[in-house]
Image 1 (cartoon, rainbow, N blue to C red):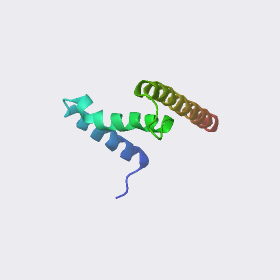
Image 2: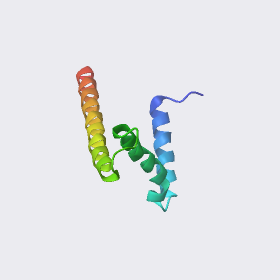
Image 3: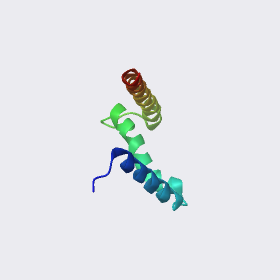
Image 4: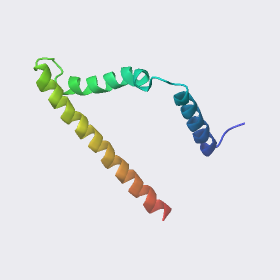
Length: 87
């Protein structure tokens, strides 16, 4: 029996909430992913690893902010497109 998209979304949300309800150490659970995400930006701004750590870290902060703003922009465009097609 195939599930509808709405049913799949509901089940996924239930599973996610159940998983987090059973997680006492939230930071510990997400630490590896957070470290990898942040390392991505340090590698982006200094692929050869030649910059001073403080300089690289500051540049990575700006690269991460730029990335987040790009995501925000794409999200706004998608929402506008969906609103236009719904209305």
